[in-house]
Image (cartoon, rainbow, N blue to C red; front, side, top):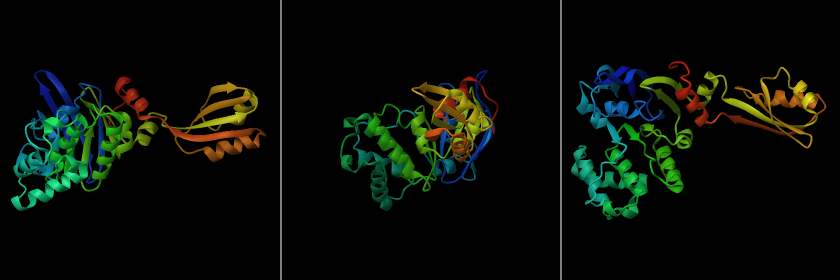
Length: 310
């Protein structure tokens, strides 16, 4: 659905993005991550035919964003960081207006509006003025206007901005429900939402792509990602001796004869850890597999400057 090669955009002498290259398949939900000023919004605006690149190319559904912007716009739905809403219009009226702008035929407008409202949970406010809506509902209207014409690609810039916890859960469910029927590229600072919503991640730092892949792949690339937490009743020295050779081990707690450890393990080594502990005559109390959280991976990639895109 998206094929980007060497995409670069300068503002004067400053390069907002440099030599970005990535591909996104049909039906994927992709998280686009980066600190403020990293170049996320610039990239999304180029893909949305709002900005022209200085160099490089971006192709969406077979059409170049520079040479065929009209065809690209027909295939995308775009939600900028501030939803483009007309406060004086009612929800249904506004969505019908957007549908007509997007080229939906008159006989299909009503059905498309109903479909968009159903997907975004707006049926109950169909006749409500947009000015009367809460921030959460305004965000929903922003998503609805982006998908009312059934685009192949949805570009969502900070769709969860300013939402309360309940609204975030609803937005997460909404985006998940779009998987398959649409390709979704979503930019967000809300890392837990990205973690629970997206299939893969693109991480950008200072205008350059520094990593791409699943959370597990990023963790493995950074030499971590997976780990096993173990609680064992026994002397610290005996516990450490039993786990020697299994993997890097770190004691994270010790109280009342119980030692808590973390074993770095990109692969699932729980059976091996269990055999080692029981084989040494120690009492195994707990054995859990965990994955390094996205927040930690993100900070390591964007602050430590780990590597280049993979």
